[in-house]
Amino acid sequence: MGKYLSDSQWKPFAKKLTDLKVPDNGIQKAISTFSKLGDDKLDEKERCLVILMKLATELHRRKEVNADKPLNEDIAGLISEIAAGQEGIFKFKKEKANALKSVPRSPLLEGAAWTPVAKKIADLKISDGGLEKAVSAYQKVPIDSLPERERCLDILKKLADSLLKKPEINAVLDLNEAVAKLIQAIATDQEKIFNVKKKYGVK
Image (cartoon, rainbow, N blue to C red):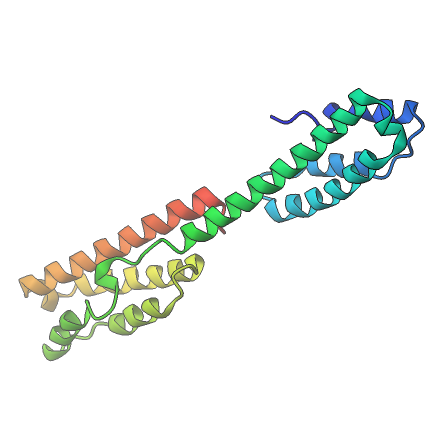
């Protein structure tokens, strides 16, 4: 918990600045704005911290502030707190970017893993309802485009579920097992993507 970046925390310092006849440069309003931003507003927080750093640095340079050692130390502490907030957001964004790139597709949904099964289904004259094309489309979605991957996975699940219900598929044990494994792979990808989106607030 910080010491300066909320309305109530800044109030005594604002009063001291007023008592010293240091004109308000907008920092009180900026702190108020920042304190109302939720954790899901990282970009807005980041922009607000840039403004706060500028305003706090301006205050720190004023002769009235430099002449008051405790106040000078508090303004320096405010600057350190702002810098720490900026660093925290930078680290979180970097971690988020890395996380979005590290949600791999299940092996059965990568490369040509599904091709032999799709070929056997086609050889038996069984319509897959577009499942092979949907698998190919999913593979082309960028690995870090999680919402788009989710949409593709929803389509894949519907197609795979429909295929598994076909008597022709149920009549061939290895095909039945292959489609069931594909459905499991789809569910695994959906769960991994859901967990990362939830953790990092991706919509």
